[in-house]
Length: 435
Ligand code: UD1
Image (cartoon, rainbow, N blue to C red):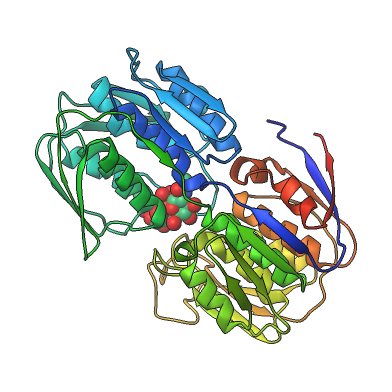
């Protein structure tokens, strides 16, 4: 991966055209981990071409599994004797090592994984994962280098997550499927990517029920076998490209992501004045005039936190004052500086604005923004801090006057499938400068 590559972006006015999104980043890597639980190979198709898939494949290979990637298919063969240690060279690259604990405990019984990374958008602790594994009977120790866990056999337990965490829920699903007895998980995340993982595990032979009140009930089974699945479309990418069209006054048609994954995104954009055409194959958005918005991010089915940064860019183009309250991650506005440098009028607050108080009510965390829309943006030189912010910068650069230079585009290339080609296909002029 070229860590310091940059993009020079020349705005060309409204972006028009078609974009196809692949399977979701937040699902594909979890399916690759789930494959470790099978006693035969598993395959996922519609996999995105992203750095995270390569990183996860590298981890699985280091454990002794075979991984073959060809076009959009990823095959994981977990049948060899595995080792229980994800090498420290994978420290900080993504959130996947922590999810390996449960499956590796079943396979090896004694596991060490390095510190997890992912975007710097808040403290991102792993305490829910650790507590859940302890409840399932593992001895778990966190060290300066990572997490070490031991268990002769995991046993079902009743677990309640303090917050409906996506990763926390996935750790429990991946650990309880082969545990002895019944696990009840309360206050689960029910994001489409989580449900997709639960369905994949069911396909592998797991006994999983989803009760109406955010409760999963898992009856452990003795063995799971490999399964195949076509990964559902990436709702974060789909939303981001729709915004790229709207923010530049153009019209983008997105193929490959079903409407039901975008229901809250679509209703939010409707309120802002966007008009949609929706079919089984594609979704297209346009707007003659954008109204301001008051939006809070929430766990699914609420407005997704990863949609927040493109939405803020869109609000800079709306006619009036918008308020966005981030309630999932306490530090997800690191990109605001660059938008301000481009001329956007945005103010950050530590109060909970635009809705009821959230978990960060008393934290010293600037997690609400007020955006005065309608100010022209101009080009900027900026360094991309994380995946989602990076995409927001590109949209802002496309909506601005004058060229922009964005450094550290490797964040974009880790999380989006062929973003350079997709933006170029919409007419944006981008030059990639190798680092
Ligand atoms: C996943 C997604 C990310 C998305 C997020 C919320 C992946 C690879 N990433 O991240 O794109 O923004 O869900 O939809 O799928 N928390 C704790 N302790 C824990 C775990 C989480 O306090 O042990 C907190 C987090 O700090 C955060 C909140 O719970 O405030 C939600 O985090 P979580 O849902 O776990 O996010 P991830 O799974 O890391």
